[in-house]
Image 1 (tube, rainbow, N blue to C red):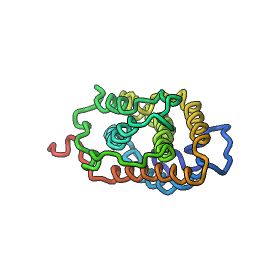
Image 2 (image 1 turned 120 degrees about the vertical axis):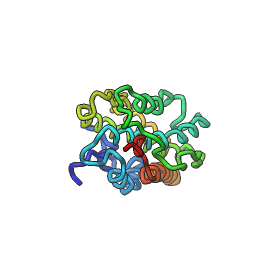
Image 3 (image 1 turned 180 degrees about the vertical axis):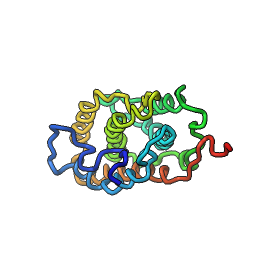
Image 4 (image 1 turned 45 degrees about the vertical axis):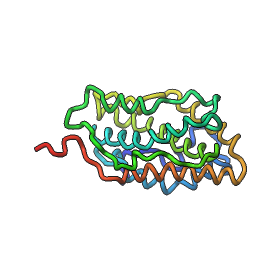
Length: 225
């Protein structure tokens, strides 16, 4: 549906910024191509894909992202190379931003989000140990932040006075941040085997998010009459 608010930009544009060259090869292009169908599926099933977004949809969106990110971020702490190296150590604390938005004082009690995702959210992440695989996982996480900036522009007035802090965070520096991420990933992930491993990591990250988005949900006031 053309009027839907999209979770992230289309696969062709989600990872390309104005003025950024598109080489048509390498890990970035492979990741775009290999995850294109998953991008489109997420556009259809995430809470913010509805035509008329309400605050409850935003909170449900955050709850799904939190259930997705928490085990991945915990797993990342066991590594200090690749995307978890010191050169990229200045990471955004997405979980803290999500928690702040979920507990913001502007939220009506009937919009509070209860147990929104299945017990799959409690499972530990058990991905491959390679840096290439983790680059693929981080590609999905970092790319989703680009879509967050688009969503903020579309929703900031509609969902006011909620500040949408998670979507707003770091918007001014998204371009340089993404370009630095892509440069480093492209320098480290070059062989066909490593590129395949990165694509597997991205696919696994997308599949976990898709599973969570498709899980049965319930809102905090579901039993209120």
